[in-house]
Image 1 (cartoon, rainbow, N blue to C red):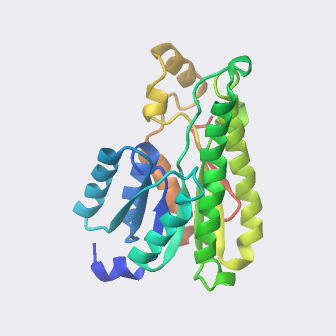
Image 2: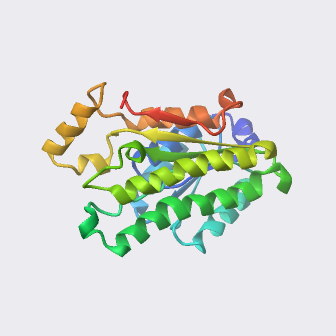
Length: 254
């Protein structure tokens, strides 16, 4: 990768970048020449592997260990990003938790709190800090935000993860509202709604549950993290310069 090209681009912050969709997104976006701020919560070894892959390909990356559910952690992410790269050009809100499987009658308050604090509060807090740096009204050069949602937002995931599904529905509403709020300030906001993707989350299901899920997908297979990363990269790119407030399905027809 040409070093001058890399230095000329603003950094992209990717949360939940230690594994799965976040890891592949960080690696994919690094190939465009953008420096990457890869945020992870606990899996240091996995995050370091992502950083190594980016550096081996000639890219620039900063690893930041932080919990987006903690308000005190989020401003630090963006301070470190700005100190390292100067300009922030984008944010991928990918960090998420499902809070654990539970029917309503067994659902515990701590599961709700964990799910909404990470998925919803974390996404809002990261968006807030990113916009403070990117918005034209704050003297920024503009940028893009992509929120990672789930097909659960439409199905509701009854009997399994209604709390998770509700958090992702909130993310989609956030996407539409912020897209309209920020459109005149040079910041685009879009979302990718993922289907059954081949990550630890779905691999953790038993064989019977996976078979049930596959039967629901018209393409009859799981999606790959690279396929989601490609959609995110498009929405972050100038090729999507007139796209804001969109929720793009990457779900095999589901």
